[in-house]
Length: 242
Image (cartoon, rainbow, N blue to C red; front, side, top):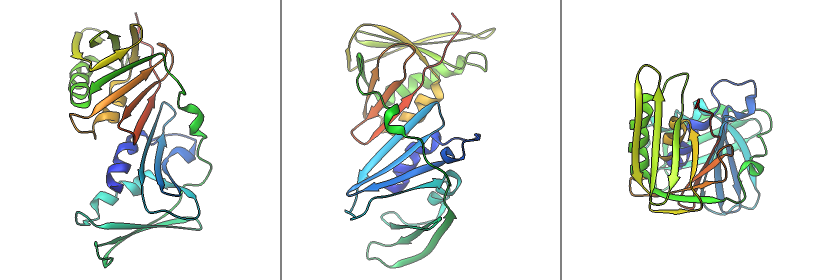
């Protein structure tokens, strides 16, 4: 469960930034809710799960490079992870289902600084809403992204009744027009452009038959991609040449 939660937000960790606080994943626990949050300034990912209740809330920023190590710790499927936050460090210890120590542990310093107040970044309402299967969106995005380059690193999304049309273009290479069906669409037609790798990162860890809800306002406003009730990714649009 922890590996799945972390994998969904890790792509959004800032790779190169002077804002050190966003070079990690925020772990936040409040009563029964455990939340992982990451942002690189152009997108924000939040995933959550219900866990055993705790009396006191706590939060800490875990370095992204440390979280990349966890899947390599050779813990068997079904192993439990005990996470301890103490002073300026985090400790991960692995146990089997009976609580027996598996002899695997990871320790790291925490990321210093205050994580941005991300709650205000998430749009509170929307004018348009589409639903599409994660597998369909992932497949067509990978196809459309072939014809993008450094100058036009974006895919144009055209939402309308019944379908989503993805258009990409790279000078001296060609153009691509790919259409995929929508399960539902509410609102007037809209064209908006996104970095395709950002959207692929948002849906790549979802089941192919999972439904992705895309909430939109205008072409210059961020879009929100939701999968189930436990994951969301807010993505800023990009400007493409006419």
